[in-house]
Length: 217
Image (cartoon, rainbow, N blue to C red):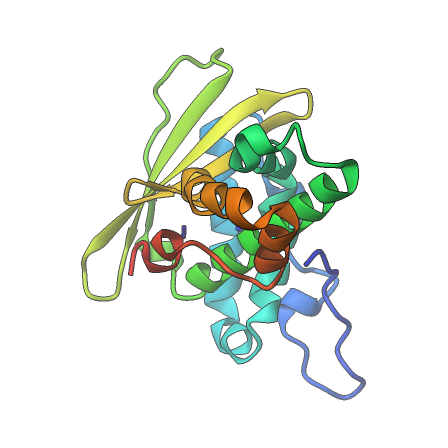
């Protein structure tokens, strides 16, 4: 599984509208954020149930998958925290405008890359392992496993922390490859060589580190 802000579009008059564009479309309200395991399980189940029911529609228009992730999962993802970790030592030197551009571009990258991976997953192929660590801990890792069509499995783990708004995820680790770490390593030397604006423009173009693009494939 592997996460642009837009509301689901209204279908044209007379056209058959998929459920993702209806008023009954799943939303972040369906996610139980009372605990780390509950958050990941309910978010994943809501998205996969919708995909299972209307997969042909989503394959026809992948942007609707991105909208699905945007509505359900990303409100529970601490994008600013992740973006700060990705920029690392460069965050302090960045201007307020650069920070906001980077956060927005990073959000869109999560949206596109997570959504593109999600389209091939089905509910019966997802296993969320019980979270057995200290329930009062400030940080948590929820392990999941996705079975691919060839029978092989992919480990997809989510790193979360407890915030004033409840539990939020801040990293996705696919087969040991951290989304946050991969971006930080990918961008660090480029920022040194070309500057932060160049990196922001590359991220805005939809670029992702090779490690992320090939993880789980």
